[in-house]
Length: 67
Image 1: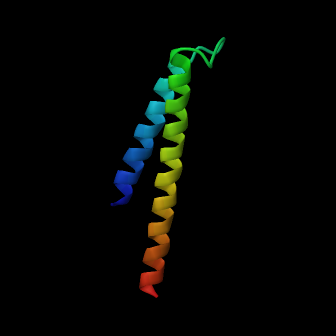
Image 2: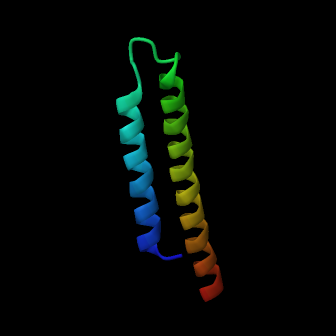
């Protein structure tokens, strides 16, 4: 996987976060569809963290292989 794909995946995850924020009812965030939106936000944040960890591990592996 190359750097462009990582960036595209992170941008898609950020777009999903933005969309799910619009679905949250901030007056009652833990009822109805708001809880689903919050779960979607958390899942997108987890995806971003996993992508960044994977990208960092690939950079470290590349540095190890070069030495």
